Every structure is written in C-alpha cells, then in structure tokens.
Length: 74
Image (tube, rainbow, N blue to C red; front, top):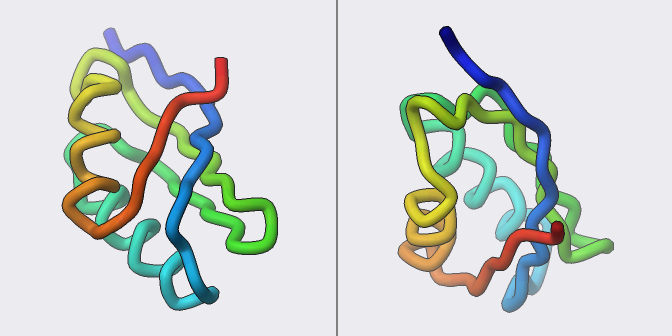
C-alpha cells in the first residue's frame, strides 16, 4: 500500500528558473516521486512522493547531486 505525502523543501543556491526546472526533472526521475514543483522566487520545492518507495535522504541527496542544498520544511 502506498503512502503518498506532500512536503516542502527549502532550496539554496538557485540562480534562475532553469535551476528550478533542473531540480524538478531530477526529482521526478526518482522512483516514487509523483510531482515536483520548484519555485525559484520562493526558493522552495513542493513534492508529492510515496514514502514506501523513496526516503527523505534520497530526495535530499538528489537535490545535492543537482548542485543545490535542500532541507525539508517540517
């Protein structure tokens, strides 16, 4: 049984809307991430993901590999 949740991430290091799009593409490539909507102006990303398929650490690691710093806002 899947457990889809919606959470926000604070993103540091974005310089433009292309940065936000790159983060979205990389997050949505993760198995279990349904939707990623990154807002450059707010420096945040809102994601919907299945907690059974992808863990928070993997999400943070993916953003880091893209070149940015992220932390969950909880």
